Length: 449
Image 1 (tube, rainbow, N blue to C red):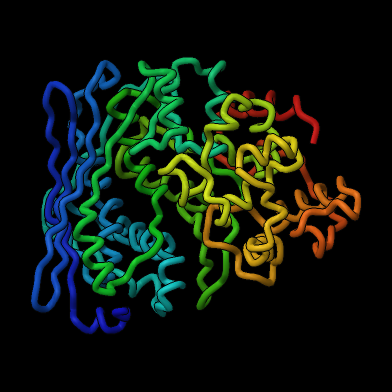
Image 2 (image 1 turned 90 degrees about the horizontal axis):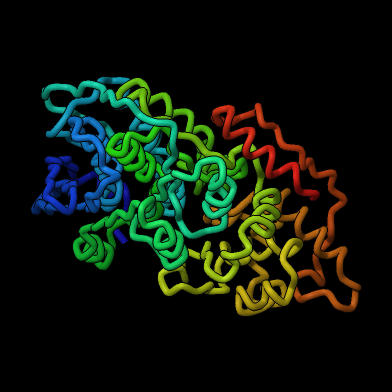
């Protein structure tokens, strides 16, 4: 595999060449052109987003500002191939504080990538954004209405948001990008409210670089969803972008060279606060981005899912490995974590039917089990909850068995005496408008944990 220092020594450059907005009677397409310049060759990448054009698209306001920013967020999929220090922007301008903002996003958003590729680099040294002297962008002003766009990914969290908000906000728009079966079912139930976006990466070229041993790894995908959602909010004149990120997204997986490595960085409250401030200052003040589930932890969400989302039990998929095949792979951290979270709230027979087996009785999952439950192990690089959440659920489940009936993974597990605080701080670290807090409180306080 090519090493970071080897690639840096080649003085490679990444160039954001252009963006293009195309429209016809049936669709709006965004096309982005990037280049990776190496010593002896230049590779062009072409990236595309396609949005069906229908009655929900109600504004023709100039969208260059937000589309330019979508291109900066999407660029990271191609930039990471060789992580050049120089990132040249030829189609827009950034002031110094904007450059610093994107330096932070790229550094923390690529934290897992940096750790797994054993890269030693500081935030200031990872990437330098150089914008050619072009005209800056004016902020976009659109008179938005009090409605929501809810990104639907097909996992339990976004389905909980959808179920909890559908009565209070019956006109909510539902957004999914390259939807999997679970999210497609929701969109197909509400075609007049559905926004289905097609995202086309230049995959053949990315795969070719992967085969040749260039760098690869996790990107901050939720930041891409964030910028695209702001664009959709402006197009549809919709005020609120309602995410489904919970409090446990704030916990890092490991600390590496003083950097907190968080697989879920772009789902964290730190990113949410940074993103809200950036959008308000540089793009628009008329669309607001926040996470509806931020006051909750995974225990609350699991119980809410078991009560409010029963119709989705056999459709939802949180497994990245199996979601494209509409199945649970039964072997990854996400499958095991989801099973653990739900094991106290959905009966064993139904859980086995959902996942295809009792995941707590599979000896092959011991290492994953330890990574999820033991704080001295490396927390799996997946969208999973905290050690406290996992051990609360496991201890509760352990105590429901007779000793001789314990499944394999619980036989050597030591339940913990935990005083786990299940109180919800609606006024803590979150950005929920008051009406959303009231809806959330109403649903949570119906339940007993």
